[in-house]
Length: 268
Ligand SMILES: N[C@@H](CCC[C@H](N)C(=O)O)C(=O)O
Image 1 (tube, rainbow, N blue to C red):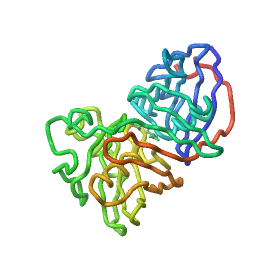
Image 2: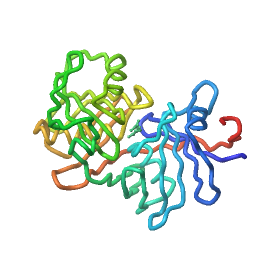
Image 3: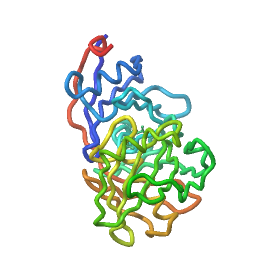
Image 4: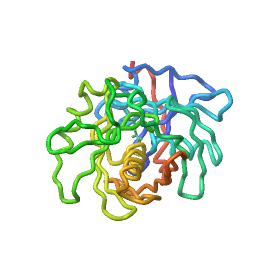
């Protein structure tokens, strides 16, 4: 079976996006791994499937390069919104999100963050604002769900952190039964953060939209910044607006690179 796809990215976090609203495309973990593979497949950080949905404009599913499925993807949400248009309501496994498209910038209402240990989830009850566990020189992290699980560590601006080594150790720690995305954040101003993310199932990426949401929310909760927060990732900036009790708003660009066609059988 042949399928059409869009190659897109948000700040260098790149995606193969398949619009299967009118012609269903069946994806499993093996097919996802094959499509994401940069040497033998099409190559991307995440595979995104847009499907028809009841009561929303579309549903969006997300696979990592290791074949695991994720509950949310901030950068891909902006790319999908670019395809669906202003006002789109999109169901994700992590909850419904809504989009505003204003020229080059796309704003997504990412929904409410969740802080209870079972919502992240952690394996057992702990204070998620100040998780009393250390890895390497990292201090206590802040764990939360923004539709997918994150732990964010705040370090000094000049701290050297080997995230390529620590990221996979933390991702696979038994404290996180569904594994976790790992952010290392540096507060660089009263409303500014620099952020690197080790993504669950993907590794280091140029940008992680949900990671930026998680870092901004964690920084506001820890009273390290005042919102709205500019989060600078290796691939560029995202604006994140959140105050306690409200949903997270993420604003940033989306880029359409090309459209292509491929044979699903090649990835089975
Ligand atoms: N790149 C994404 C997050 C993708 C999913 C993540 N790796 C997970 O497994 O939760 C983003 O922009 O948010």
